[in-house]
Amino acid sequence: MALLTGKTAVITGGTTGIGLATAKLFVDEGAYVFITGRRKPELDAAVAQLGGQATGVQGDVSKPDDVDALYRAVADSGRRIDVVFANAAIINVARIGDITEEQLDELLGVDLKGAVFTVQKALPLLNDGASVILNSSNVGSRGADGIGVYAAIKAALRSFARTWASELRDRKIRVNVVSPGATDTPGIETLASLIDPGPSGVATFKDYQSTVTPLGRLAYPEEVAKAVLFLASDLSSFTTGAEIPVDGGINQI
Image (cartoon, rainbow, N blue to C red; front, side, top):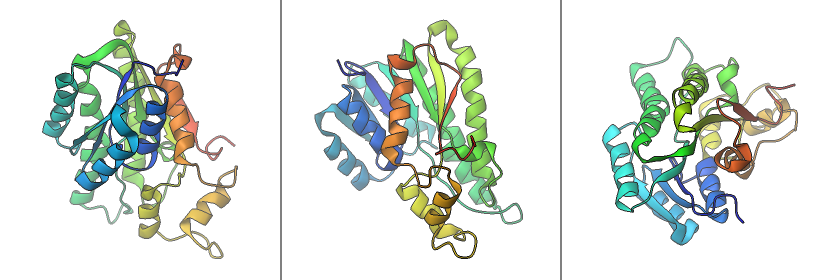
């Protein structure tokens, strides 16, 4: 039997990258998935790839009303939720002397407030024994020039997982974190366009990331998705409050 047969999952930011790879894997493992995205063309394309086991709900997780609309769609379908993957995130680049209020508000809105309300507003629909997964990052425990706000938010998500795992334990709801390293997604292409490539002699930012990662390459989105699947399924039934790094060893060695 597939690992998620009969389960219903919600994945924010499910139109590209890690979110879409996870949605595909969940569908393959028997789940019905609800995905979100801010842009309708990309959302429609993702749902078309996922087939009949998926519903797309357009929205911006930084807007609580949009998160409410997501969960109304779930409730209107007659389903309850077994898995939430709070994945939606953006990134921008600014050193401490250059951070603007607009940049700060944008990152806090999507990456922090969005994750909080994605989980909070799911609670009435979450089945007891459900699994909540937060998408953090290896930079949450490292100093990363130019992305300090993003890194601090990712560290905050790690902290939230510990607290929420404790707060929700009476319902047997498990809360865990996956922390990817550099992953070959559209997001890293955006980041590469915003920062210097790295030391002289390194052709591109992606090449630089490969050189500093012990396994010598970027992660594939599907590799991160497999870690999320582990946390979503009964394979991790005795795991809560934990962090799984999928970083090629960069924070481990």
